[in-house]
Length: 150
Image (cartoon, rainbow, N blue to C red; front, top):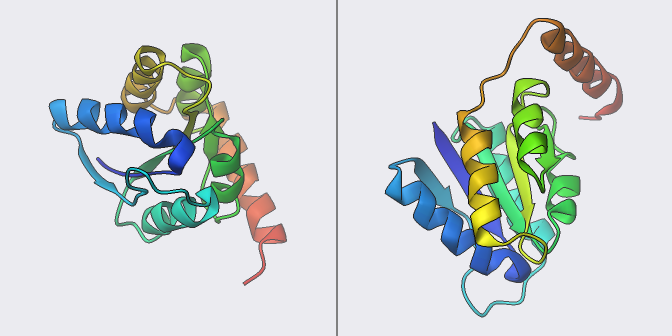
């Protein structure tokens, strides 16, 4: 599994901790910014990372802004992306097991590092259950086909 990561300035410190976690566990990732002491728009960095998931270069993305909400809004504008903002372990588990989330968004201003790392661990380790949940994912794809314009 290869992960795309990105943050804005509000998520930078949390992202640093998550990148260390990924590196320690030898999880392949590529960071699309931002760097330290940059004041940036989350939209630009979410777009960079998510384009690489859509292209197949990466399997999933972890995006961090102040709340995780802005990054999720941007990511969900891309066809095939199921971005889920998670602020607890249960949401992380359900986002994978029921929703087959391929993008986790987190809030650097609302989550301490230890909680965020547990959310990341659960999100990375939880498998999609399929079954009735796959039927729902298929319905999501149909909604995308109907509403996304080329």
